[in-house]
Length: 358
Image 1 (cartoon, rainbow, N blue to C red):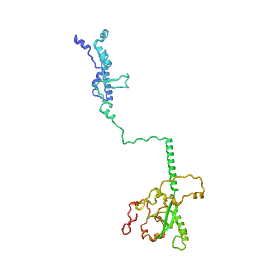
Image 2: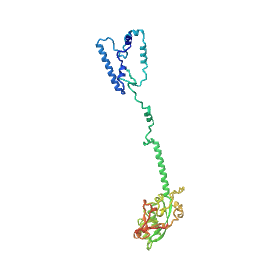
Image 3: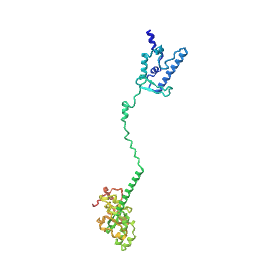
Image 4: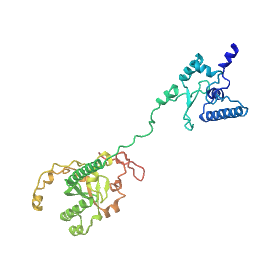
């Protein structure tokens, strides 16, 4: 009698969940779980058909997921037994779900849950040491920062500032070039012949100075010829050359070039020791040439008036070509902007070093 009562509460067929729990142990992929579930359902349908063909009138309870208990009608009429209450309580509280596969393709919209012993949940990237490593990853310091977007207004403002600075520099440059200087000089043909002092501007070219010196030579009648004035009138600028110390200055340079670049000659001295600063501006509204010339400062007050006249030599090029192998013309050299004259050691054709007086 006790054996019969025990058999009433023993399920004859396994439910779907029980079969899935048995057949899906160790699965971690959703596709494998769906495949196993389809096989289990197909097996249960096949068993139901075999039971129907064998004449069994009792329905297969395994398809519904509830056990087939003997005497269920009487038990139902008497009320739910302690086993049914326990099963209902277990169904309502299935426990913690470690991994679930949601099958959106199911007809009933039901989701099957796999127990922890069947499928283990992979560790989350946000937890554990891997998550800590990802949180500590920093940006690549080698990648430069993206430039900030510049608006048109900012570009126009920057262009206006550059233009204002350019105009200011050009005005300062023109002011320096317009500054007058005094250049004492001599005519040299083996001996120093005084030539006086010429008023120049820092922006004038060398050939302008030579042209003025030519006129001075014609006025003074410099030379041994009887008709020296007529001879100077026939001399062109290309026939003259300017020697500053021992450096021959080409015609196409202006005095401002040597002033602004602070050009150093032999002996560590500046070739043209003039200031690069702009003079103090004085307001003048009179544009008449005669009045402006009358207001010009005296030549004795100009910068460079007290220089040694022998430092600046005006030489006839034809004389130089005939005597360039004789001292002192043999020590003269043409100006080279790339040459560092302060460290240069001059030697003659015999290898003897030239010694210049300080």
